[in-house]
Image (cartoon, rainbow, N blue to C red; front, top):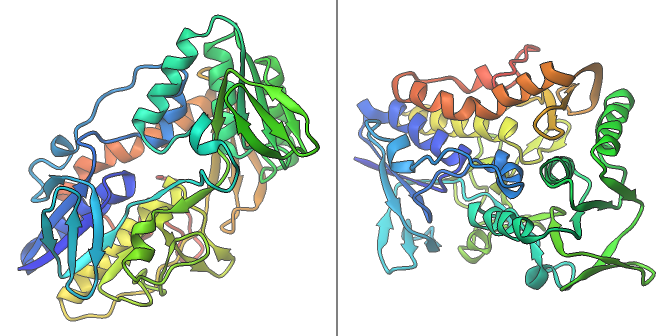
Length: 387
């Protein structure tokens, strides 16, 4: 038996576990998926949870049932690459021959004072639920969303639509949607204005207070609830284990997604610093799932005595929901720069909902079929928008 542990039960971790179990079944693979929560969290939809929407509950044990994957609920306290062991907080020790590190990232709460104490974050389902409960108690007031990335935009518009009684202010250093093309960004800005979102860019939040945020220069913006969506870091678990990490705590990997310091460890999704010809990939479900499939392929190749292939990926789109009734999809080049093509309105809503729901629809397929990573990545000049 080859003991394979997958650490992390998000989109990337579940995909890796199901895929590697399917691929190594005939070669003695024994796959264990470890996650702190029994619940599969649809992280792409946490802004909907924060706005008060009730989403479906999916238990990881049910998602992997019948696949040959053993689910272990527990939080990893330490990884020992020398002994090839994962120690859980409750004292259990799990041995491995191959480790797939899919533990993701968490919000950087310490670069700005007050974030850890006074801001809501999307690190897990419970965090989004706490924000939803806070917003439900507010009859009037101001919600500040800090960060002009796509998560910040989706959160601001979702909250503004669901709570028209609240003032929603989006604060960011750069122009929201700055990675998008001019026409798609203009559509997004018009949607924010229609929903009443006050967008201020070119500002920097230097402190989060219980009832306000402080900007560089001393200005205070009153806030009854502050959502922080600016900046993420890898869990300290990897660095504490002695794995080579970058300045953000992400595991540095080789071309095959193996840790450069410990080749028995594969790092996937946004937990890994994955370099491509255009630079280091940024963590999204769009890029994370292909890394999981590639790691599964690579482990299966190693068990057959073959060398893993290098990982190649190109982006396809930037899907952005603008509340429940509107969206914009910016189609992009493989390096994530905008193309001329974009989609808006109800067709964009349908597209976004299909894309956001696709991993859950794909999981049953992964139990039966060894889905190649190239189907959801870019290879040989061809692109496929499955994820």
